[in-house]
Image (cartoon, rainbow, N blue to C red; front, side, top):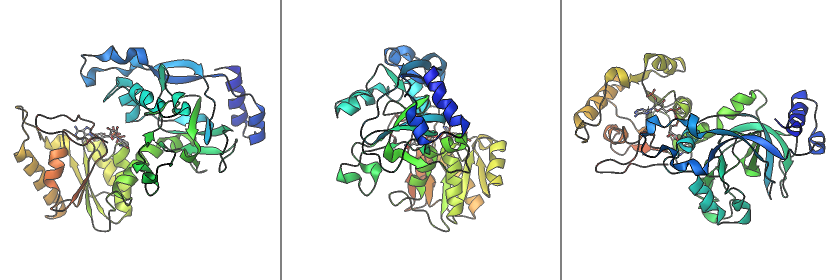
Amino acid sequence: MSSEMKAVLDAILSGKATGDDLVGLPVPKTMRAVTTHKDEIGMFDGIASRDKDPRHSIHVDEVPVPEPGPNEALVAVMASSINFNTVWTSIFEPIPTFQFLERAAKRSPWDKRHNLPYHIMGSDASGVIVRTGPGVTLFKPGDEVTVHCNYVDMQAPDGHDDSMLDPDQRIWGFETNFGGLAEISLVRANQLMPKPPHLTWEEAASMPLVNSTAYRMLVSHNGCQIKQGDIVLIWGAVGGLGGFAIQYTLNAGAFPICVVSSEDKARLCRTVGARWVIDRNAEGYHFWSEDGSQNVAEMRRFGKKIRELTGGEDPDVVYEHPGRETFAASVFVARPGGQIVTCASTSGTITSTTTATCG
Ligand SMILES: NC(=O)c1ccc[n+]([C@@H]2O[C@H](COP(=O)([O-])OP(=O)(O)OC[C@H]3O[C@@H](n4cnc5c(N)ncnc54)[C@H](OP(=O)(O)O)[C@@H]3O)[C@@H](O)[C@H]2O)c1
């Protein structure tokens, strides 16, 4: 760690530094950051996804600290998190993230700053603002913040009702550079939220991406708008997305059916109040046959299990994200007129006959 970075960190950790104190300290010229390298994009060519080892592609580098532009802030990161964006970035799938940086660089000189031979990843962070760029009014140096990953400038009217529909909407630290896994992050001011004082730095940095995605999928007006009494089938119910989906479902007065892969995970679901749990490993479902065709008999068996739990009801909502392995089964078991909501395709997208939805 550079001496300038150490001075910033010591000031924050002293608990006594004001915003003016932080502005009085020089912004470090360089910082340590977790990166992938553009010249290593091809390093896993010919290797199966599960065998791509991020330890070979992830680096810790000393890199320049970027200048904050209009409506931006530099945040000294106190905690960040690893989520699936980190996984995709580090194995260069489904496309190398450098392609996002190159595409965005054509948009403006400010976007061009992101197009570098290295990509600082990380789509979650909590920390303390050390500098703000021109035009930032709601936040100032010294503020303790949580960073959410929705990266939009809101100039296009398409996004005014729902920022995810902005044609330039991106995910920070995945489709932009200068993400959370660094000593200092560059963020847009509209990504900032005050850090809830009752949360630790780590707690505040572990939630925004998966929490906001679960909220959008199940609750928001362009999501499923779940309501009292709905039955919601949740894949990966104690994963990042699933853990929040259970809570939103229960808080809505709806009924989760939790799908997990072990008895320990099933127990966790019951601990938070879910009554209906399916251990997919114990049941041994195979929705794909060895010949590459969809196994409808297995989907019917899965649907029968759901009806046994619910007393004959089918799910009103299916909360998808595994993708190729489960998508057809999700459609099969949903009630007529039910909703399937998805944001991902962790197990792959291309099938012999169809392409599943990828968020
Ligand atoms: N579009 C967006 O905005 C957005 C935001 C957040 C995440 N995502 C994506 O959503 C996906 C999940 O993220 P996460 O953070 O929840 O990951 P996670 O914490 O690893 O949880 C995913 C869970 O899905 C289950 N699962 C995995 N493969 C499966 C399969 N083949 N069949 C059935 N279940 C399977 C597993 O649970 P069990 O083994 O217990 O069944 C796993 O724990 C990732 O692809 C991520 O990139 C997208």
